[in-house]
Image 1 (cartoon, rainbow, N blue to C red):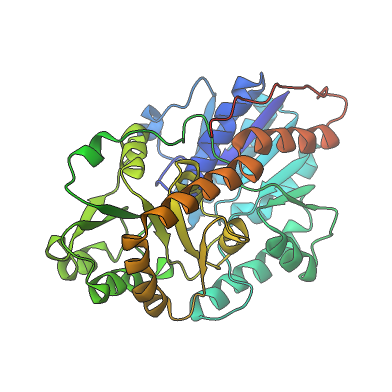
Image 2: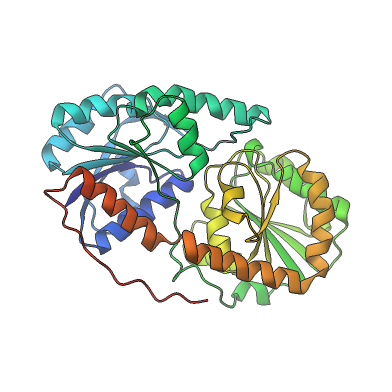
Length: 387
């Protein structure tokens, strides 16, 4: 089966990781994949496996949204006519082209699948969440014209259905992590740290991620010289926050880490992962930390509370994050047994619900339902799961 994948390769964000991991595993299962993305020709060195790729012209792109050039629709249509795929899967990049895709695919008689990533907080408890809800309202009429819309949680599905997307169109396939690659193991970086307990945040340094709430709580809690907080990532708030919160308070800024092996080693160096976001989808960073056996703390924004509920981690309310963490951080510092138990439970939850193997198998079933004459059901042995 030939899948035309429309997604992102840059700038780095969760959508980029999602596209890389899913297309690589589709290739492993014998699919043909063509990759169409917004890029200039000089970005072609970012090759993923042997996917033929097409560069869609754009005027602007960021981690959040993309503005295509007027020619992008024509380039996309010509590429699809050339490749003649069996199906188009769009990992939506919040681009005006997203709204043209149903018409383009209908004209070419191609089934169209979307993965809808925007973060959310269905309780609308803050400005960021209400702004994100507007994104769902804007997209719902368009998504109703897709053949399938993949979301990560029941909350997202309920929201889209209430906004008019047919229930049969919306399918829940949670994010997944390769549990063979992301697993507990010794860390080279940890050996260089003289610390009793290491905490880590991984993600964008942006307002919706609420990183300053974590930094304030860390300083107020007075965690001591033998505790470190690692901040991995980049974003618009990094420079201002780094000037105020630094190694004098036991805070280490790692910046953006593009190399996956290095990023994995840094993640394994920590004992506790903290995600204080105001809005989320389903955080891949959280799932990676769970797979590595870290004790995990996250707000109930998006689907993250759903991931950690019933004992797989500690769930915070998005209101008053600093106050909650001020109490919680010393507890996680002093209670080694609690940290160990939470790390074990996080890993087990990941193996039960959020492996990439299961994600791809569900995706195959979706493809088969749309192209029954092309895809034959195939069965793959479950990977050996390390505890």
